Length: 396
Image (tube, rainbow, N blue to C red; front, side):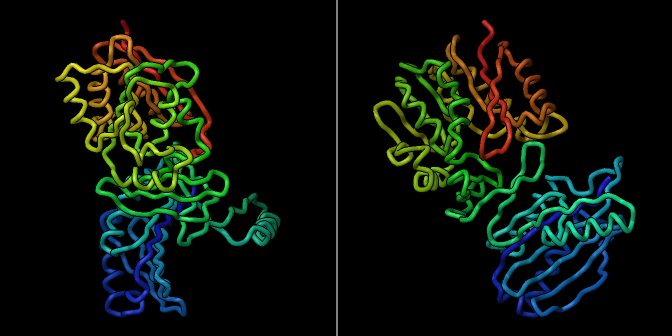
């Protein structure tokens, strides 16, 4: 059991907070969005402060929601509630993401972020002193939690098991929305530049181990091979594969913006392949990979290797939903274009998510024709955890 606090932040034009009518509209947008998730939302208290405005709401489950408008353009929403061991989760991770997205649109925010339930405090020394004093006075044990920094740069991302990870990010180098996703490249003091898609860390300059484990460098022989990459918009896999002297590599990537951003800010891991786009031994095709896969299947085109460098295995209770359906379809289409002795190589998820990995393996075992698979693990610096990779082939 624990007290859980969900944090959401939004940056908007400061003029709208200073304008009385505009600020009332902002509050209404927020209340309407919250009412979707909290029944019988009730106003409790509000206060004008020197630096903005404070407002409190509650609901029938004793969830307390604090909304603060800061004059410089920051809006923070803190949702706090008690969760017993057998209580249902009031705000799922998907609900938090949906709430953030709805508010970002309605508030016309230039920046938004969310964090799952965490605990917050003051500076470390005073926290420890306060904690020690309370332990002695109340005869209890306690722990002082570190500061959560809520400013213009998001330093927090999730591990595969939904733990919060703090990064030493000091710059945002690229931040735009493509037709498909939010695309960011940030700079970390220890990891170098890092690609972040829809608030999920994808690859950093320090992550050569990720690419080498995915491609099984030193184990697989790519010389003279015909290869198809599904996704791979950061260019790292294509760049490393070309060093292995393949006959030809075809890369199918849907998001032009990802490639443009990585070409500028991640040259150390992709070289110039995203700038050239094609040469005598490779071609990048921009578009939906499913269209190309269906085309190759009809033409009878076959590859020695197909790389699934698309979405991670979902974290879910059952293998259902849009992403799982997409993974099934990708697997089925990929094996239609693989040579009989070919291999499908892909990334899975963190070792800390055995349930999701098991569901993916069950999915592999259900494929027709039958396949066999092996796994490899590697600690990926930008993920701050061990990742699982799959090597799948036809069971002939």
